[in-house]
Image (cartoon, rainbow, N blue to C red; front, top):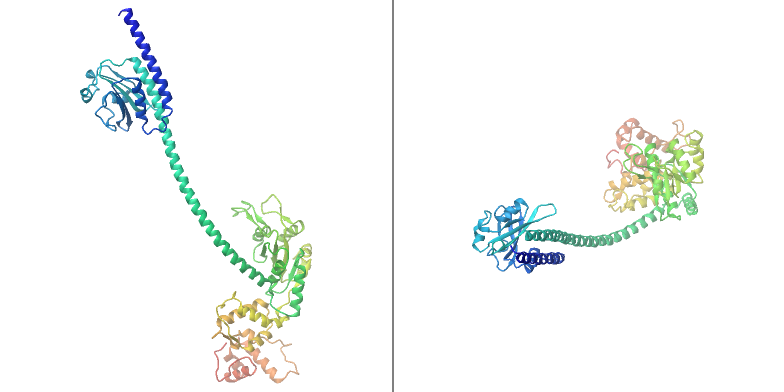
Length: 551
């Protein structure tokens, strides 16, 4: 080769390299803007074809075990349509997939990999390079074809490899961008769905809130009514009125109050009135029945416990002393407290703070203490069953509930209240009539169970009443015919004979547990005579002519 030919070849090579370098620079710039392209393969082909007048340029993508024609450009288009698929192990593309290396074919007619179909359309030489992913897998193949033999050289191989590398980055970025875009669409769709769901949930919450507000308003009205009932202590006896006046006087103070009285006298009503009439009326009112729980359980109820402080303490628990913070703590039946609990209560009353079981930190609260008992605490103190210092802590002010037998004038009002009350059994029954003798019998009974016993008696009468009427015979036998107390089982000398007979009959009935047949036999009289005497003395509504079933 002459020097001029060598010089021309060098000039051609330099020009070719300059063109190739320009292609790479422009391709790099252009590829950065292809993220939004619907067909990145065709965009790449168009850029390459604009700089090289190649006969035909193709890009085949690899999907599973097939090549798919994605884009083509050049002086002619193959008769193959975009989307055409061929097995991945055929042709030069198959060789590139297997080796992951460029494949230069200067004369396709002599190459065993070339397909006869492609020879028929005039292709003489071909260059194919793989487009590799970041992991080194073949994701596509860039294929150049010419109608001249020996159309490509090693410079073209190097250039096309550089192009393939940039294309790989562009395709990878475009795929990532597409994935991110798809994920964002899904995320946006999910967010929109969730937003709609939350909006609907919010609307439901607002509807529920309106409903709850309506219900709360109704409940508040009921609570207000119940609170008024809590302050409504039935009765007009002087003893009761004096007690209520004292309650209303001390209610606004913070003084500890001890309520003493027999069981069933209504000590809890007095405690509630103290709360509702005081400055803490809008704050918690918490009741603790000290006699209903064992010492260990009572301590946990009063002071709470920390998680893991004992077997079964699976979570932290707030005690009732803490629950009552700002309000009133009513300790009922304090005479039942063990000495151990008394000591802990004393510290709480002195310091205004306590420790949860297993706790390390003192908890300070502000509560008013109201306590109640049916025991004689002074005697309990003397006999060592109740701490004297705790007694004086409870006993700032003492209120004594009178037993019902000492305020019998209140019985008619209580009977009327219990009959009308909807809180007791048989409330749906409308009692239209009460035999006047019923009230007399109830007034003559001493009510050892006090108001609670009267309440239960009225409940029973309401349930068993026939034709909405309470009759004398409906009253339980133990109330209708109470035991008569006599000294040494003898009657007074100045007692009228009729009274002696009446008391003797009652004692016989009591001895025979109300069985009238046995009573008549023990008295030596007929059952008819017994019925007539009971009727005469006012203990039966019907005489012997219409005997009732035995009580």
